[in-house]
Each structure stands twice: as C-alpha cells, then as structure tokens.
Amino acid sequence: GAVVSQHPSRVICKSGTSVKIECRSLDFQATTMFWYRQFPKQSLMLMATSNEGSKATYEQGVEKDKFLINHASLTLSTLTVTSAHPEDSSFYICSAVLRYGDTQYFGPGTRLTVL
Amino acid sequence: DQQVKQNSPSLSVQEGRISILNCDYTNSMFDYFLWYKKYPAEGPTFLISISSIKDKNEDGRFTVFLNKSAKHLSLHIVPSQPGDSAVYFCAASAQYTDKLIFGTGTRLQVFP
Image 1: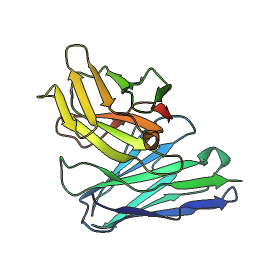
Image 2: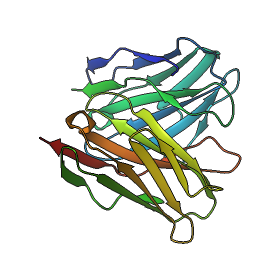
Image 3: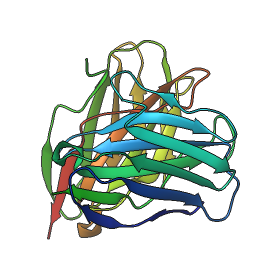
C-alpha cells in the first residue's frame, strides 16, 4: 500500500505557541489530503479536506483561523495549530488519496500535548 | 449526530474462533464502506471495503457483509488471531465525495 508519513510523531508545547505538523505522501502524488483528530477512546473526526493549490475545506465547527492548512505540493500538506491551548491536545492524523475514489492511506499520527 | 455507529465498544474472542464486528449507519447516501484497524498511537490501516452494489466482499480471513435495507454492515474475521487485537473502525462515504465518516470503534481482544 501507499506510504504516508507525519512529522513530528509527538510534540509538547506551551499554551499560546503555534505548532506545525507535516503530512507527506512518500511514494505517490496525493491530489487530496485529509486531516483528522481523535480524542481518547473516540472516533476520528474529519477536520478539513486539503486539495493541492487551493484553500482547504473545513468541517463545521472547525476554526480555520486556528487550524491553518497548507497544501503546497502534491506530496506535502501542513497543519498549523495556532495559539495552542490545552484543549487542542489530541491525536492528529492525516490521510492522502491519489485520485478521487481511491482508498485513503493514513499517516501514523501526531500526538500533540499543550501544557 | 453520529451517522456511523459501532454499538459494541469492545469484543473478546478466543483464538481460532470467529470475530464479528458490527456497524450501523443512518445516512442512505452512503455508498461505500470501509473497515480500518488501528493500534494505539498509530494511524488506521485499511483492511477491506465494500461498495453498495455488493452485499459481500472477502479477502483472506476478512469478510465484510452489507445489508443495505437494514443499513448495517459487519466484519467477520476467521480464524481470529492474537495479532488481530486492535481497535476496528468502520467508515462510510457518500457518492461523489472522498470524505470518510468514522464509527466510534470496537476494541477487539483475541486471547489464546
């Protein structure tokens, strides 16, 4: 299957700082990438859909000014959590698809802890 | 509004027996369904999928059944192995979209 990586795998930051998480498709060019977050023992919740070269589409209830998504190339999407607060602590996972209708391949996730 | 539901948060099965994980959905627009396996602190791994034009799809030890009239799907794992112990998520997508809606997951434990 296709390989998707995320960096960093875990990050601890202070309240008020910004954190950038990278998602890369290593062996294919992803037309679309997705960002999810998962709270402990809960489902994966889609945050936004990211298409290369265009603005991300955010799900209802997700603050686009807080969770900045940039999809600068067909292999890289970044999620920046701005002015992080402890309630932003979560497991963030990205996924990527080569083309519409393909299976989503997930990255290993990033554990964010905001102190 | 949870459109995809997995009502059993956990399931315990003996090695060699069948594991049956269930999933219900409410949105009749869903036409493609997937099962993912997830270990703690890792991303989900795709297992098997099924289109709404089918009622069964099989891949090795994994079989997914779809009952459209009941809006219900299930994942059968047989024979179950200790390495199958993980959290299993079902997910659904509607026509003309790649967006996946996930269920809440079922933790499967396979014991020797």
